[in-house]
Picture 1 (cartoon, rainbow, N blue to C red):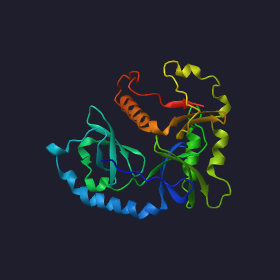
Picture 2: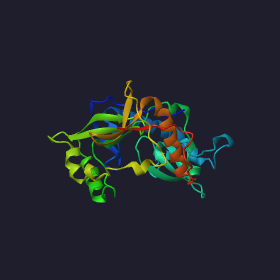
Picture 3: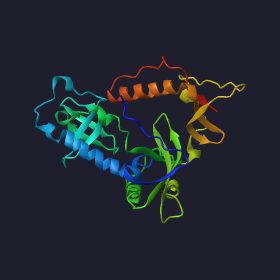
Picture 4: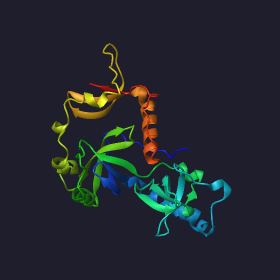
Length: 274
């Protein structure tokens, strides 16, 4: 059973506050509507698990592995819902805090299996990216990320949901401060990678992974994958979304486990070039 994600309606606007920031294309927000739910969840997790640390170890049926949900304690003695991303040879786990977006390094002996009733509650933080901003090739500078993080600490902050990327499970948003007439997106646009510097001839990228042509005689339901300019962009067919998602999940796990990645011959061609 997976913890469900709430998809916000495209075009809607909500008052939000920041949960965690990695960069301008990777950050987490809370809706004003979930403040009470966050407090209640924290109280229930504490009541359920605070005394469990007196146990010396997990029971036979309580073994935790990578990709398992868990209850994770913090140094402040608060408890959070977590997802185990990695476990090292010393028994330490990297845990993604589902309702906040950051990660925590915790000895696995302090983690506890997440009870079913806590899995049924949807994720309280939603993953976001500033819409129409392209990350520079060398990444966003630390100074810019710090400035962006600082701007998100304002009291009255509003997010307009422009698009939802189903594959990446991320919302593309436009963020505005109450007293401002322009969005934060506009303030950071001068620092993004310019679209014109992208290579015009990208055939070399697909020497070994062919692209499939779309038949012009029939209508196709599509989703945007990567946009360069009005005459050059990439899409995938809606009917192939499961194949693409499975491949991305396998690739992610392979990188995490440092396994060698073979040619994905079992997957059908998904990306289409326009």
